[in-house]
Length: 278
Image (cartoon, rainbow, N blue to C red; front, side, top):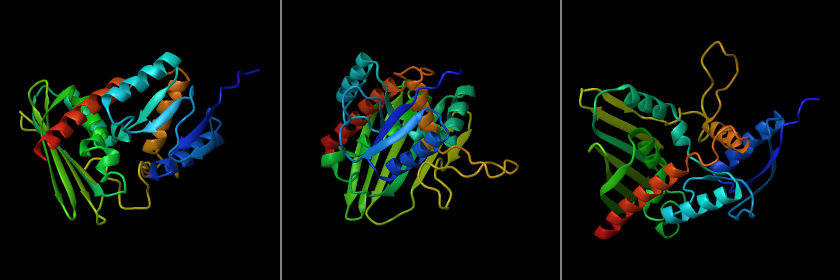
């Protein structure tokens, strides 16, 4: 008799946009018999002890707390997986490949993210200053260019919203500008990336902005013609697979934890520079 694969029971914590997509994907995975079963969902409540955890970024508001959580997970032999679908986008993959295969040094770079208020991100008493909720983007920078240091940051606030700008420097001395724009009134969600290299080449794209359709956050369009109605796995589903692979021992359980903490340290540095000017 073939061995029956172990089934991990999953409870979704938080039923916002990302949580609802998680529930949808888990139902699909459960129906396919791939080792995960949705047993419930809870909004804004803590997990019991000794449970594997998949959490949307940031895993914590400070690097100190993040280290404690990752250490606790390691001590108990548990998976603490922080979701960051920005690391799974096509734009990120293409930029990472370009940098890995290029002999030219980065001259300068800029990433801009524009979006709306959501009831949490603009409440700095809950979410921290703006770069705490920008750690997903900071992680993509570190994943491509290595460790960076916060060198400058400021924030302009108006009745319409806020614009936070921060500069980070790579170990090679290149400066990357990070900009977060958030507005009260509804605006299209846009993410743009522009990187200039010393050989004159430019990487310039709107990145992971989804097409104007019925797709939700983290979803991707159908695959190219010739593949019927088959859909490419959505970004949240891809991340869910990474979580499952950690549970099944196919990936190191601590994978991503160092990147998570490093990005939070940069975010804290940028936020401190903003606090010093206000």
